[in-house]
Image 1 (tube, rainbow, N blue to C red):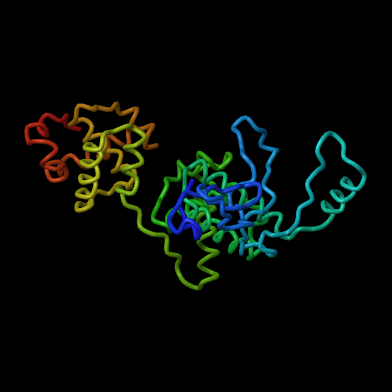
Image 2 (cartoon, rainbow, N blue to C red):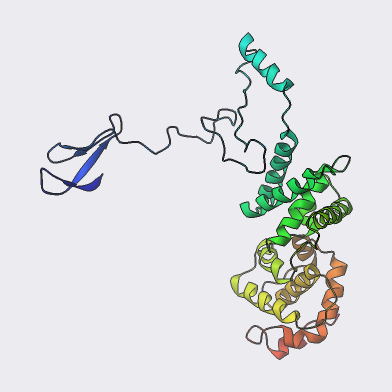
Length: 312
C-alpha cells in the first residue's frame, strides 16, 4: 500500500492497487484515482529448479551494433518434444539453409562472454574484446588460425586497454585449451593487424604490480590491514630499478608482507594464488631484499622485524 491524494477525502490516504483491473483505489472512500494503469513488473516468476530451456522471456536481447542486423533478426526455435509438426520442421530446415553472415561473429561473441564470466570481468571489457575481434574479422585474416587463441588474445588486450589487466596464465585458464604460447602469438598478430588498420601503434596500457595486488590478496584471504600494507609496499617498490615482471614483484611483496604478520602464508600457497612459480618468487624476493627497509611501511613493521626476516 502507498499514499496518494484523494480528491474526495481532500487528504493523503492509503491507496490499494488492483492488479487485475489496473485501478488505483482509495482505501477510505473507494474512489478510483487512476484506471487502466500499465503494470511494468515482470509477468513471470523464475524458480531455481526450473529447466534452463524453459525461458519465459518473450523479447530479444539488446541490439548489437557490431552485427549486420543489429542482432535483432528472428530465429525459429525448434519445436518442443521429440518431434514437431511438418510446418515447424520445414521452417527450421529453411532457416538452416539460409546463410547468416554474422553466424561466426555470434559464436565468437558468445565464447568471449563465457570467458569473461568465468574471469569475473565487467561488461566494458567484454564489449571492448568484441570490438577488437570485429576489427580483425573485418580484415578477413582469421581463417586458418586458432580461434580460441584469437578470442583469448582479444580478451587479454581488452583487459590491458581498460586498465584491468589479467595475467596470460589467468586468460589461459579459460581459453578452452589454448596454450600461453598460442595466445602470445595471437596477441602479437592482432596488434599488427590493428596497427596496420590505424596506421599507428596500438595503446596497450602499462601494467603495474599494484594492478594484481588486491585480487591476489583476496585469493589468499588476507585481512584489510595486511592488504593495505601490501599495496603501499608495492607502490614503493616501483621507485627502484627491479627488473622483474609486475606479477613476480606482486607475488614477492605478498610473501614479504605475510612473513611479517601473524598470517604467514606458505610459498606454495602464494604460488598457486598468483600463478608465479616458487623459484621466481624467491628470485624476486632476493632482488627486493636490499630495499626492504624503504619498501615496507614503517607503521606495519619495525626495524627489528625486518632484521628477523630470512636472508635470500
